[in-house]
Structure formats: C-alpha cells, structure tokens
Length: 154
Image 1: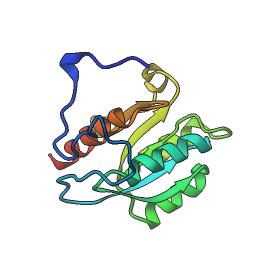
Image 2: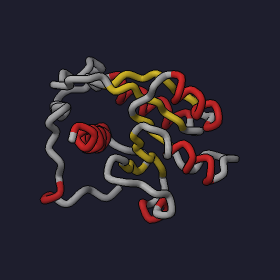
Image 3: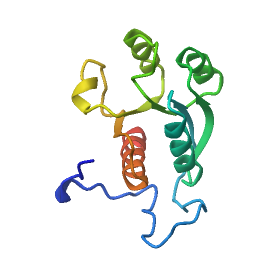
Image 4: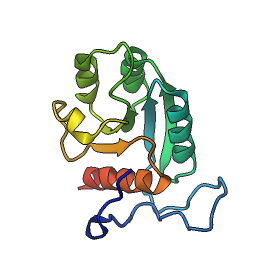
C-alpha cells in the first residue's frame, strides 16, 4: 500500500492520532462536537469487521448499519439518518447504477475498495467524499474521516 507523501500528510483536528504504543481497544478521545452516524456496506466479512472495529474505537463515530446488502442499505440509510457511509463499490451482483443512486443520498461517503482510485473515476465524487484502499490502516482511516468531516463543517 503506497504511503502518502510527507508534505501531503493530513493532521487531525477532530480526532487525535492513535499513540504509537497504544494497542488496546479503548475509544480514542476526540474533540468531536457531533456524533456521526455511520454505515458500512461491504460484502467482505473481514472488511466489515475491520471497519467496525475502527468506528467503535473512534470518538465521534457511531455505527448504526453494518450490512453486505446494498439494496437493504438504501432503505436503512434513510430510516437511520446516516451521516457517513463506508461503501465498497465492488459488491458482488450489484450494478454500478445502484451504487451511484446510493451516493446521491444526502450523506457523505468514504469509498472502500481494493481497486485504485482510477477505477472509480466514473462515479461522481465531490470533495465531501473520500477513498480508502483495502486494507486501510487505522491511521489512514482516521485521516480520511477527519478530511471528510472537516469538509462537512465548512
């Protein structure tokens, strides 16, 4: 997995970085002013579990949906008033149009995929949306969450 260039490193203002020596599962204390209601939509059980663990140990994030079913997610996103969706765009058996329809919902997305960013260029993403390459480290997860939530606060 390529590391970001030193000059492009994002410093967290909402969530502090995980201390290097910390390996426990306690939530990270942040300065979040609001709690972001999160959904994970992915058909890989290991990816679902990894993202769930990251969300659970990050102050300011609350997991409200965890599913491998995109159609089910569409309705749940509206019912549960989700703010931030972690979405695998390569779910087996799902048409690209269904993903595009979900992305048009009134919430923010972090695309999570094993494919390079160029693979998703045909999906219209604006600056409020993010991208994580699988498997993402906790530090990269925090950086992308911070960037997306910072855009939202503008």
